[in-house]
Image 1 (tube, helix red, strand yellow):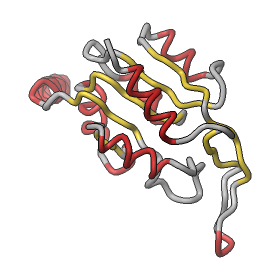
Image 2 (cartoon, rainbow, N blue to C red):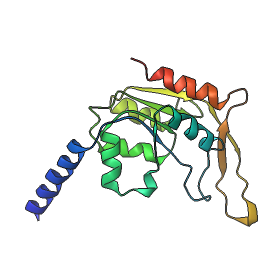
Image 3 (cartoon, helix red, strand yellow):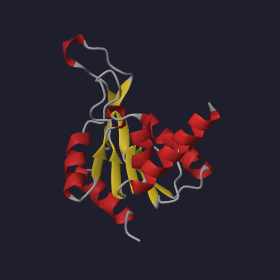
Image 4 (cartoon, rainbow, N blue to C red):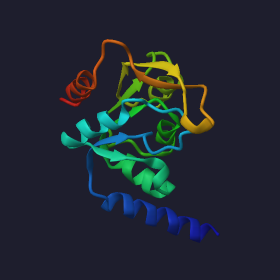
Length: 166
């Protein structure tokens, strides 16, 4: 059993080491089932980021190994607050220059996690809760999020890109 585990660890490390580096990774929630919290303007944000070279990543569409490889080979990660950020606990983040967290406020458990891991990060407190409404009587989460009043997708894209300058 131990030999098999060591072989798996070696195989995982080789896969990660051979992965093409990802300069900028956006972790998306836009393909999640509508039973989960939605970020209203996320598709528009994704389109704009993709035009600027960001890779859009939907963790739920990948196995755990692929998620780890993507996270570990990224220089910059941007994501709305959500459980996908917690996978950073299980990764080697030596290549990671910064995590940009789109959030409702700058005091949250995701920021505490990034601080505890000594990961360079910048929160952008740009989201606010809105009532979750689904058509056809589908179950809805407690709330969805959208950009705060007065903020545009263009504002957020510019802010994200400025935070990636070194």
